[in-house]
Image (cartoon, rainbow, N blue to C red; front, side, top):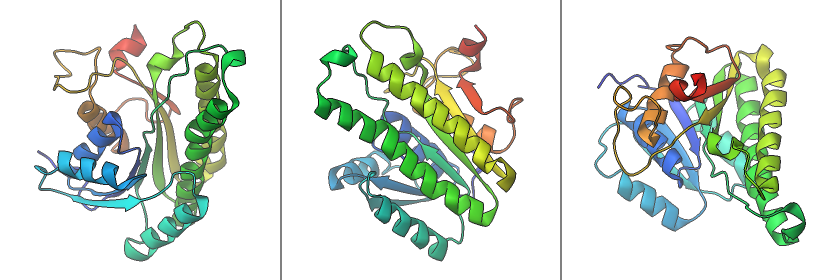
Length: 240
C-alpha cells in the first residue's frame, strides 16, 4: 500500500463508531499519527483490540468526555507541545435516530440529543479550528449519515439536529476560509459495515474503510470537487 499519510497528524473523534473506527484503521494503514479521544476505558480497549493486526502508523487513545470543553482545550495544548500542529481532523460521531414526534419526546431525551449531536460537535470544531487558525493550515471534516436526510414520519428531532449540524458547518467554513483551512461536510450514503466491498464492484455502497480512503483522496486533492463544502460519497448515489 502507498502510505499517503506518513508523518500526518490526525484526530478522529467518534472512534467508537463503526465509521470512526474504520477511518482510524485506514489512517493507520497509511502510516498516520492518529489521536482518538474516547469516552470510556471499554471503548479504548475495544478500538485497540480491533486494530491489533495493524502494524503501521501510531495510535494515541485518550480518555475524554466530548462535552468537557476545558479538557478538550488541554488536549489541544498537549498536541501543540508534542506534535506542533494537526493536519487533519475528522468528526465521526453517531447521528442518533429519534423516531417520535417532537411533542412526544421527553425533555431528558431532548437535552441528551442536543448535547451529543450539537454541543459535542461544536466543541471539537471550536478547539480544532482554533488550533488550525493559529497554524494557518489544516483540514476538517464533519461526517453525516445521509440516510437521516430521507423524509420519514416522526423523525422531527433527527431532522432538526441534522439541519443544525449542516448550518454549523456552513457558518464555520465561512469563518475559517481565509486561514488556509479546508472545511468539509461529508454525507455518506448506503453504509455497509462488517464486510469488505470493492468500489468498482459496488459503486453505490460504502464501508468505513472505503470512507477513510475517500477522505485521504480529498486530503490530497485527488477528487474533482475539493473546493465544495458539501461532499457526497459514494458519488454514484449522489449523481443518481
